[in-house]
Length: 592
Image 1 (cartoon, rainbow, N blue to C red):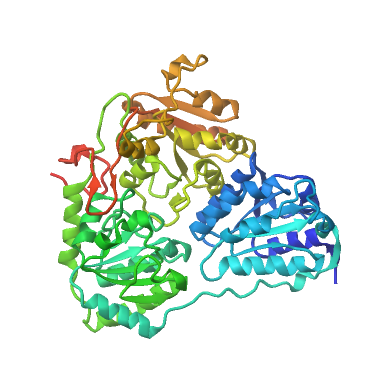
Image 2: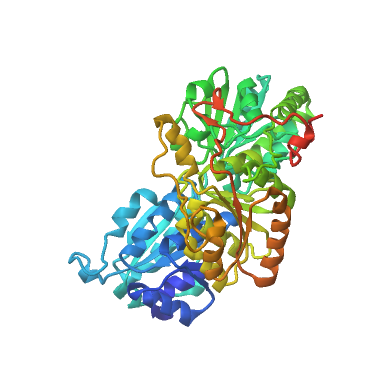
């Protein structure tokens, strides 16, 4: 057998498992691994400016394409602790990423050596496996098990911690005979699918709730086919958005407290049966459970057994990978349709579309400073059906989910449960790395953008072009809105008179100068009539310079965005669209 260092064996296994890109920062304790990458070749490395940024790049890379697993690397000590937020975000959204950290020598682990931290104990609650590899000969098995766990059952992240002496030790390893371990995913039985369809058949106003598990399983086409066979309208969750096109006649809108549509909530409240596939019944989707569940029968399909009944007890639960379940749902539905055993749901589906015409939120505002609704209207018009939107949390994300249009799986890439500020920028770089020919559009409020703004230099250095829309109200907008309940506006204002940039009119940070200083291009917009031209210019600049291009829009300081505590009581602050001209980017021209 071939003799090589354990680090070289790890590099060869990464390539055998399909890894092509790595995101990270070298350091003393991980340098043997970097040496192996340089010696062996075959892996493209993107040098991040912050290790947390590297972890979010890995997340974006995974989320962009079925089968991808992003890998991030850091040295010992703070590099591992910096990646904890990335592990949390990945774990919360069932995203497989592999974090590799360097570590002090094995003999020093109990001696409080420089930058020797027990990273595995810190990471264990957030990973499917966290392991400090103490024996060089264990390295191949640890990496093999890592990929097996990341892909099996509910996907999720793994951390492997490699002491420097373990990396450098020589072992016998034959990469020619290496094989990835078989992936385990639970599958629904025929009897379970038959019962679920029996329950659906007994209903009058059924809905399908399509969650992120449908996206993760690469099962969107099957979901659409099943909906079309049965005629049942679909409610995508925030993580499942794109599993059915927004302009499909069976798209019923999103449901929830924040990232939802008025017509989606109304349709949920009118329904009597819900089939959830690959979803968590997350609290921002359900709100007060009693309001969400009252008068409805529920079937829940999820890959993780302990998800069934976690938020509320369904009437029937099925433990299954979403793709395996949908393959059977389609098969049985075809048989029943051929036998004339499926109800005609056309009247119910039509009523769902009628609500859309009555309850669209108004987007067409000409105000200066710009109202955010107009930004999303212009984005819908400027960017095509295959655009990949990337965002995390804030009023910008909430309102974008209320007003943008998404037409395909993995075209809405969002840190759904964790929602860490700063995630958007590095995640967009990961998405653009995975899809270099695609159109990637990130969306941030000013605070999210500032959190990890240094990563713009990564896009400039490695020529990773994408467009970043920054909606700037110089406020912690979501926190300001939440503070209304406490009758305060306290430490949430980001505005100040910038002595170096009077042109920003008291909005504080000059994002244009910062972006340009980091090697990128930037455009600032004050007037909504300039938005369309700015987006077109941004497209040209990304094509010409191959760097991130920022489009900063100066918004009105205060906009209260629709949200509430239960789907029966969402506070609306703006009017509905009364005619087609009020919402010209609406996906269905249902207004007179």
